[in-house]
Length: 167
Image 1 (cartoon, rainbow, N blue to C red):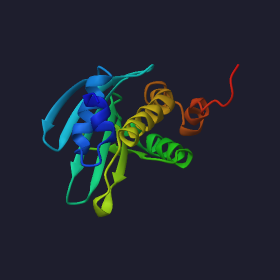
Image 2 (tube, helix red, strand yellow; image 1 turned 45 degrees about the vertical axis):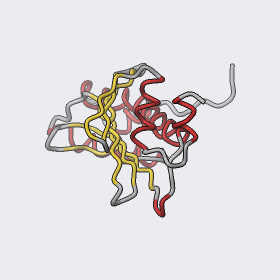
Image 3 (cartoon, one colour; image 1 turned 60 degrees about the vertical axis):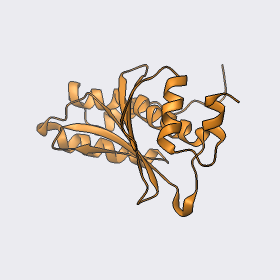
């Protein structure tokens, strides 16, 4: 059994060790900040997203934060908040919010592992894919709102929903 398979199937593997193994396997740039935190960059179609995952043994939660470089200007804040509200109504897992002090839009996701549950590599990979997928879906809408001055409803109109079926 290779290292990837071991961490993807081991019930006692540390969640951040699993993330590190996935990042190395997928050739994502990453930095193990502490034993309980890892930061990485993932290239999307629209942007390179910065992800940070942290394990809190106290809360028994693996937290993911995904950011991208779009500055939230104070004059556009109300429209951005309306856009975030509309986006959050459309997604099932995780949520967008702003970090006012840093002027950033972030996507957050928490995987609760209460009662000693363990995370699988598949769950963590899906968690990362969900975050990047949501950012890819809504990045053009945030960009249209912030850089082109579109209202939230116009910007939401360009956010592509998942396609079903095939051509």
